[in-house]
Amino acid sequence: MRTVGILIFDDVEVLDFCGPFEVFSVARLPKDDEDFESQLFRAVTIAAEQKIVTCIGGLAVQPQFTFADCPKLDLLVVPGGWGTRALVHDRTVIDWISRIAGQVEITASVCTGAFLLAEAGLLSGLKATTHWGSIERLGKSYPGIEVLSNKRVVDQGNIVTSAGISAGIDMALQLVARLHGQAAAVWTARRMEYDLQLSK
Image (cartoon, rainbow, N blue to C red; front, top):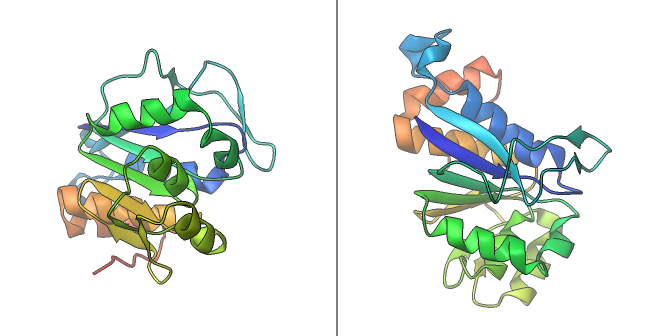
């Protein structure tokens, strides 16, 4: 079972992190259906400090772990939201992302989480995407990135970026398909009653 760490912070977009959390916590092989002993991933939330995170819209979330005590991760998901505008200047957060990205199998972003990956130097020379309202800003801020505006998910191997908000669900389902086969992704999407559109 792979452990997926999902970064959360003040002014994070709720569906950016809850969408992937739902996918990874629901994911099973088709034959396992209701067998919760056979889950494929363990999803956990991680924040810089152990304090309540206030999301966009006012949702209050208690992180499960901090940078200091988080378990060994296999995947890292970095969501977006207004909070990313401040976090690109927070060296503690950027350095943590950079360090963890060097240890995990896959690092992924949702929405403007791409700016945090870019600031950590993880997108240089790669193709990437972000929320449609921030496409131009990402390209201007980080000219070494080939920013794509017509893709919900851009898979570059160990780095995967997705467009805004709901696209994080597509990204997470695509990772389920990559790591456990398309049948697992199809079952997971059906369980969630989600219209699965895997990128080609």
